[in-house]
Every structure is written in C-alpha cells, then in structure tokens.
Image (cartoon, rainbow, N blue to C red; front, top):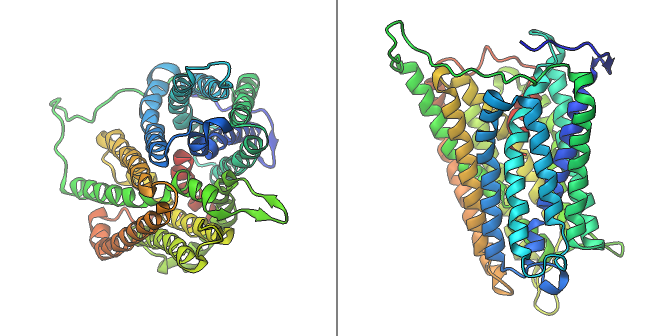
Length: 478
C-alpha cells in the first residue's frame, strides 16, 4: 500500500494535489492547443504552410485520431497497473506527447517531401503518449488522502478546474501563435506546455507525492467459487449490465454530435463566421476554449440546481435525456443561424459569432447533465469480475462516437455547396438527438428498475460529489 506523504498543506490540501493540478493543467494546455489547430492546419493551403487537404479528408483523420485517444488509455492503464506504475507511465507518456507536438512543429522546409510522414509520426506519438498519461494522473489524486478524508471531494473539484483551465488556455495561446506566426509554431507552443507538465512531475513528484504511483497497483484476479469455476451472473447483475449497454449505445449519439466541435464546427468558425471584433480578427481556434470556460462557470451552478431539487432531482436516465435535448438545441441554434443570417456580399455566408457561442453553451450544458453519469454508472453497476471489460466497452463506444463524428462532419463538402450540406448535417444530428432523448425518457423507469437500487437514496448529495462525478468522465474524455 502506498504511504501518504506529509509534505505540508496549501489551502487546506496536501501540496501534492497542486503538483498534480499543474501537471494535468499543462498537459491539457498542450493537447487542447494542438487539437484546436489540427483540422485548420490540414485544410490550410500549401502556400500558407498547411497540407491543402479537403474538408472531408481532414475530418476523417480527425475522427480517427480522436477515436485512438479513447482506445489507447485501455492499454496504457493496463501497463501502468501491471508493469510501469502510474508515475513512470505519466512521465513516459508525457515525453512521448511532447515529442509528438515538436515533431508536428518541424517546418516543412526541413523535411521537404516527407511532410505527411513526419506529421503521422508526431500524431502517433501523441496517441501512444496520451494512452499512458490520461488514465493514471487523476487516480493519483485520491491516493493523497486517507480513506474517509472529507477533503477528497474538494480535491477532485480543484483538480477538475485545472483540467478545464488548461483546456481553455491551450487553444487561446496555440491558436494565437499559429495565426500570428505559422502552424508549426502553434504546435511548438503546445509542446512547450507538455514539457512544463513533464518537468514538474520529474522534479517535484518525489518530494510531494512520496511513493504514490511508483509501484504497479493492480493484481490480476477473478471472482471464483470454491470449486474454481466462474460464478454465473445473477438476475440483478444481468439487468444492471443491460443498463450499461443501453446507456453506452445512447452515449454514442451524444458524443457523435458533441465532438463536431473540434472538426466540423472548427471549420465552420474558420470559413463561415464573421470573427471581426473591434478591428481584431478572432482566431477560429479560440472558439475551442468556450467549452472549458463554460464548464468552469456552469458546473457549480448545475451541481447546485441538483442539490436544490433534492428528492425531485431527475434520475440518471432522465438527466441523460436532458443532455440529449441540450445537444439538439445546439444544432437548432446553428439551423437558425443559417436561415436568418443569409449570404453576405459575394455569396459567402458569414454568420455572427454569437451563434457559435450559443452552440457551445447548449452543448456544454448537455455535457454537464450527461457526463457525470458515465464512468460513475459503470463503476456502480458493473459486476466486480466484469468491471474492466464493461469500462472498456464504455470507452469503446466513446471511441466509435468520435470516428462517426468525423465521418458525419466530412459530408460538409467544399465551397458554396457546404452551406446546404451543413444545414442537412445540423438537421440530421438535431433530429437524432431529440428522438434519442424521447426514447431515453420513455425507457428511464425501466432502466431504473434494472438498476435494482443502485440509483438514488444511497448517493451522497454534495456539490463536491457531483463535481467529482463530472471529473470522472470529462476528465478522462478531455
């Protein structure tokens, strides 16, 4: 068992918490900074330093990349638990991600003729590094506290804000550097954030974390009966697995729409949005910060609303349905934008930025209604001997959703036809979200029955608890 170091406190928490806060914040700064400019870089003209890809090709690659981001942590988590230990996995993963950022930042003139091959090497390193880094950093937060320590919930709230602070700053900095200098400089800026994250962990972890995360924690075991044969699933366990499968499938619908943010909507902001504000053209990549900013603002408010509702608080499936309704409202906003703004001179549509702000606001509210359910639901309902498998299925569904998101977004097409295609995509995604919300609402009572008491009265009703549940999903998703 890891001993919990006593290295002093800051703001009533172990100083190790703020080391993990900084490590994660700078890693998210790097990842989100890179992600914000990735698609824009791919479609930029060759003479502007990009690859000159079509929108469809860029969005297809984006979908494959974000799918891999959710698949590699399954292997990275296993390696950390059984071979490397969490601390070593985080450092190795961080070094690989930093290398990926910097390789993507190599000027095209240096690797003339091999630009795309070098780019793919960088992207591959990012995927592998992410797999080692992401599943391990947040689990170390809880290890800083003794069992039953009431500060633990508050620690996750602080850590969760670090995730979103990095997610907000990364696109602002990397996006600005990319627009003012060049794309490669933007990737380098993201890489610098990743280097800071790794250096902090290498220099300060022993001092403030002690031996937490040094020794691999997991042991391979199976729940077996005395005869050595696997116990059959009970009816309660089978019903709970049905709930996990049902909500996992519906989660594909939500993330398929939500993850248009970094792909389709990034292109929309770049090509079809009036981004001029008081003589300054806002970089398209900056809109990628809105989700993190809105989460920081609205997560405590949403948590407070659930607390105020108390016994009238909706059950998990109904919250899931509400999240899908907010998703549909986001696409309805974009439909209204296309119908009301019209075409500017020259036939090129330029909608107001406020439509995009509303789009991201609705989708963030949907995320706050739906995300706290995800991993918390799996860990709560899954039979112990199948917990890892079912958690893997949840991540697999999220990965599939990201790939589908890229596929759907790729139908945007090019030039003037893109507007008609965009309207079709927004209508399709919005209608799918509404139909799914209705179906989830109608199924909600049955799903709660299948949970067999896991939903409800024994849940702690504290604001910090809700934020910790939010961290469990959005922390891993991000």
